[in-house]
Image (cartoon, rainbow, N blue to C red; front, side, top):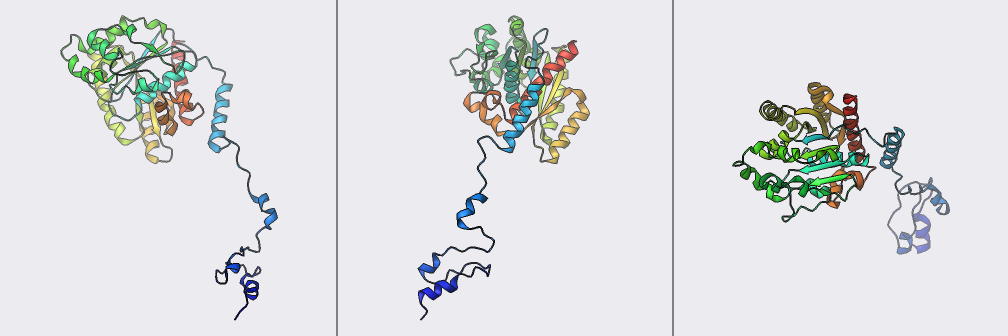
Amino acid sequence: MTEPSSTKETAVEPSSGHAFSMQGTAETASVEPRLETEAPMDSRETFVPAPSPPGDTPVARAAAVAREVMAKRGDREWPRPAKTRVITVANQKGGVGKTTTSVNLAAALAMHGARVLVVDLDPQGNASTALGVDHHADVPSMYHVLIEDLPLDDIVVASPELPNLFCAPATLHLAGAEIELVSKVARESRLRRSLDSYDKSKFDYVLIDCPPSLGLLTVNALVGGEELLIPIQCEYYALEGLSQLIGTVELVTSHLNQTLNVSTILLTMYDARTRLASQVAEEVRSHFGETVLKTVIPRSVRVSEAPSYGQSVMTYDPGSTGALAYSEAASEIAHRWAEVAS
């Protein structure tokens, strides 16, 4: 019978380089295997990399560099328009980023000295949520403006998000407004009448967020706006609905609002890992040219998280890729208009 001591001597062969055998006694199994190239136990800690300091990641470093580049541009106060720009953000396809675009562009413009009003025409009230504004059933809202002729001044409230940011909230009552508007006089231009009787001069920008449809609410937004901003998701289905939207815009321009023009197209939810995203971007740019902003909005988890905290991504995570992209897009919009005006 083999003694335990002899088993312990033959169980480990440092020079063999083979895996440790689990056969033997309990004492044998407690011996830790070690390869020839392994460092001694007392010096192993020198081979363990030190943990990265908080925020020291490739993404965080890239965001820090981007913030430095933006700061060096020296344009913290972006050019302000000579008169109020009323911009309708519309696309009948759902999930392309209309509300996200409206809220984050508004926040970015407000952060750079502009006074901005967001008019929420979507019955879901997501823009109101993202701006931290109450929009329960008892709150005076855009429904009362469109259906009961309540002055716009009676519903506009300041957003706790930023000092220069304001919101005209939407409630679920708007869901029935589509039907109620049918019997109203001048049903397509009720929003425009409200805006005309409102002192818009105290704002630099009025952004109108539309529902995902081409119903009377969206038509009211097209008639009430002077510019149209179309967010386009970088996927095939988004291109299918674009022609229908442009057709509606042409009808509105011909019969209801001759001043409306498609001033801006913004590519959203861009995934650089897919070939389809770049193909869609190329197609849109080839058809619409300079109308398409150079900045594209990437897919970003932070952008999706921000509304659950009653914030835009601009204040929720200013260093995220989504916030930086929306800031660049807003800068393009502000500077383009300044170049045209000059």
